[in-house]
Every structure is written in structure tokens, then in C-alpha cells.
Image 1: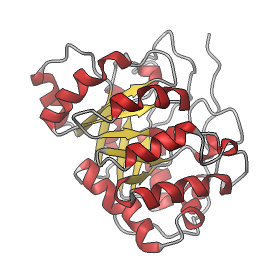
Image 2: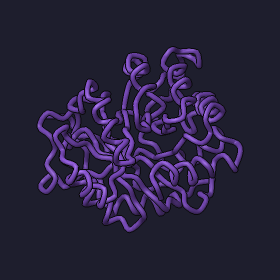
Image 3: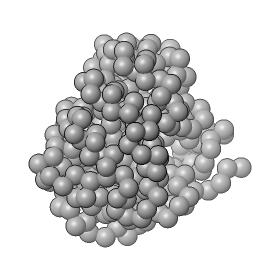
Amino acid sequence: MTEQCQGPDLSPRVPRLKAPPGTTDTHFHLFGPASKYPYDPDREYTPPDATPQMARRHFDALGVERVVAVQASVYKLDNRCQLDGVAEIGLPFRAVVTVPKETTDAELDALEERGVCGVRFIMAHAGGLPPEDLEFYADRMKELGWHLQLMVKPGHLIQLAPRLAKLTCPFVIDHMAMVKPADGLQQPAFQALLRLIKLGHCWVKITGAYRLSEQGPIYGDLAPYARALAEAAPRRLVWGSDWPHPAHKGVMPNDADLLDLLQEWIPDAALRKQILVDNPAALYGF
């Protein structure tokens, strides 16, 4: 029996940062009810319900106007919860899913009709797609105009970087590759991330700060990392809340802090708008 996760803070304060029109949350998940969308028996965690109605309240509180639902490891290859739920939220949306290698072209076309634009490799949790198939999926994503999304730990990124550099489709790295702020900007994983984002087909999500930081809000120890990425490739950074913060055992963030951190991390208002609005429009086709 897996441990039940804590739920999100259901009373986010009003952010100090006013979200510009078109602000996009590029990373959130929906969960439950388990009676309708059962979890994989080999999952690493059990989340509480996070419904479309709860998500909409979260987005409205932050001023988010466009959203991207991302498949979570607890559902493995069953994408129904994300695809059914994101369509109920009532905002322009896209979705990133996990599909088996034998998925047909017709099935992929049907997923695209439902807003899907990418396939996720989850290496930080058990049960994800096998990394040896990256090139196979990349070639199919290139044909579709989709991208790959990777949830990797620093060691994974170092190992995979030479292969990622040669992928034939765009790819997105979750949570700044989960680097440890205390290890410094010169740590091998972050230097690999900088090299990749400069290539032109790598995007990075500045998400998951509450998971990575050794400080409280607004996670100032990660600001140098975000600024270095923005300097290297300002057109290929996107932001997301990672709501409802599954499998997080620390202090649950107030979601306003996850938007407000951009005021410290990215002081330039024009660049913040690019990250919140223009870059996700280019990546996800809004």
C-alpha cells in the first residue's frame, strides 16, 4: 500500500505579480476519482483527488488563461484522467501523454484531435517509457510536429545528453533537470542543461522550485539557475505550477509564491511575458 500524499493548499493568496494576458501554466496534473481512473498498482505514491473544478479555481486565482495537462507516473499508459479532465476546465488547453511504442498513426492522430502535442518520458519515477526508445519516439514526434518531455534527475541528464543533442524533434526538460542548488552553477548536470538549451531544439521548464530549493519562498537559491538559462536561451523557457504538487513531502507551497518567484528570478517584465505567454504559445501551438 503506497503512502497517501498531502493535497495542495486550497487557499492561494492573490499573487503580487499580475499575470499578463495569455499566461500559460505548462505543467499540472489531474487525479481521481480512483473509482473511475484507477491508479497503477505499482505506483510510488497515491495522490488525493485533484479535479478539473479544483484546477480551475487554482488557475483563476493565479490569472492563468491557458493550460497544459501532463501525464503522471501513477497512471502509467492510461491517459484518460488528463484528457477527460483538461477538456472540462474550460480554458484553452494542450496535453502531454504517455503512449506505448506500438501506438498506431491513427491512434496518435486521434490523440492530437484531443489536444495532445507531446509524449512524456518519466525517469525520476518507476514505470515510465524505456529511455532506450527515445530515438524511436523522437522520429515519430518529428512526423507529427510534437515534442518529447523528459522528467530526469541530474544523473540521467548527464548520461543522456549526447543522445538528446541528436534527437530529431524538440524536447522539454522538466523542473530544470532537478538540479541541486547547493552544487553550484558549474555542476555537470546544469552545464549539460545549458549546452542542450543552446542547441535550438531543447526547452526547459522552470518548475518544481519548491521541490529543489533549500530555502523557503520565493526560492532565491534557484534564481541564478533560472537567470543563466534565460541568458542562454530566452525563447525556450516556459513556466508551470506543477499543481497539485504530488509526492511532495515538504511544506506545501502557496501557489501564488510559484508565480511571484518570477519577479525575483526574472526581473525584466518583457522577458517574464515571453516565458509566461509567447514561449508556450510557440511550443504548444496556442
